[in-house]
Image (tube, rainbow, N blue to C red):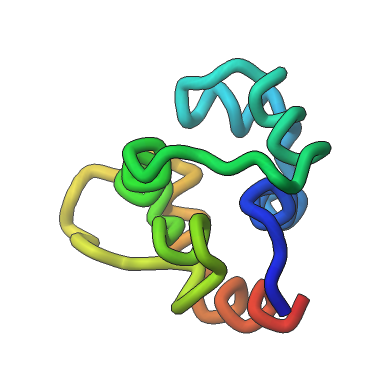
Length: 102
């Protein structure tokens, strides 16, 4: 099943038990931008932002933009990680399965 970037972001926010504001702060955008993405399925994000989200949170840019591949991408487990990234990587197998099924 294919869905919009906004719906994929909404799924991530729900699974991580975050608010839109917390997610927006984590990736350096306004909460209103996240809200628009979720409400308007025709909206997308730039590849630069998708790549930044991948680097910051290990959420695959390809999955965010196109809904393809694994949701969580573990690139360099030895790099310094924030708590959210650690939480995502720890739950990667579960999240990859759960988000692909929705």
